[in-house]
Length: 267
Image (cartoon, rainbow, N blue to C red):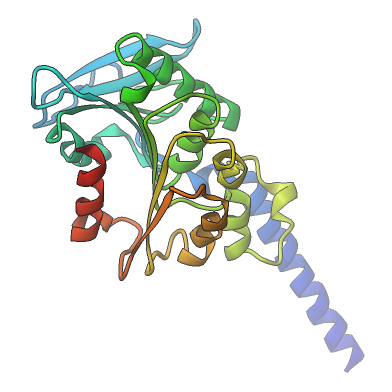
């Protein structure tokens, strides 16, 4: 009997180690699902837009798509930091939420996403975001700049808002931190020691002076509501946590409450 128990313990330990090794070395493939493009590829958007590519250094290119406002004189710009899937082409459908309210929308692709190149690291994500903000400042005042993060992009937007001024920081389906989120799904592993991407939204938002608005659905299976709601005690008095009853991770755009609140902010 002892031999059988010992044998099963060895099997379980082996399985644990194998899964841990896979999680550690394959985490980039598990966390990010980019769709790279060639420089000569063209985006096929119905929205009016212009595409620009700016060099980050000699080897690295940052791809940005600027969706123009419906009016010839925009009220401001939304710097949009998208999620962990595909590229700007996947998120372009959301640009009209802002362009119809007379805001430009500037979307950026992360290293390896779309036409952006370079090595994907957490510091590089923050550096690309800062370059986008600096570009926006050549045209707009801080009180005309809205920082918007969706899913994975919420941590990036929050970090930028913690070091630069803006009109609003809007977070759609944010996580408390990437470490806490992964720990939720893999509680038996020392995630804090294994993860290369921490994206501590909780640490960033306490240093944000701009008004913060958070949207999160109660039925989110990617970033559980229980993880996001931990951000609420960290908000300032006039910040808002908007709960979308029945909302999932990718369908908040289908809810009237989401649009009603977003439209009130943009007006």
